[in-house]
Length: 221
Image (cartoon, rainbow, N blue to C red):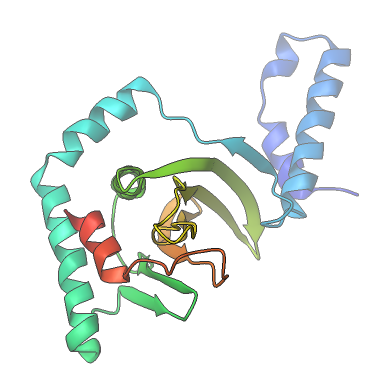
């Protein structure tokens, strides 16, 4: 099957001037195969699935950002929105939603109409991850998936963290606040949504999960 997008992209490659025809055929076949895979990709079957890695430059900039006024304002804004949600839910900004079910608590920040730099959103993602690790938690997953959603390219960066388990005085497993998932969604390389969710076990082997307010205080401190 012809792929016009792939053909158009490949027609601009200038490698044919310097590489033998046999190698060029292999390269064209590789890229056409990749485009076909991208077009049929889904969140569960992504075109790209890799481990999240941050280079040295990013880590240095992130350390600087954590001590910046921008980070402080973001934390203050997040805490203020939570306080409004608890006391005056109708006053919460439309850019954030809160999740509150018997087993899951969390929030989602929407960037659809916001001009927020992608780098800053990644900093926020990693900042929340660090805060959870301090609770203390351990990271069990850090991955990036790239796939198609209708005509958009969606990128999902995700951290999955579990509590460092220990037993309570009555020998139940201390689950802290439950298992935590933190996700950043980009659409066409632009920030779309950041999601934070804590999911607790409702099982007789586990102690009751901690209050969401305590978890939120830990995130914003």
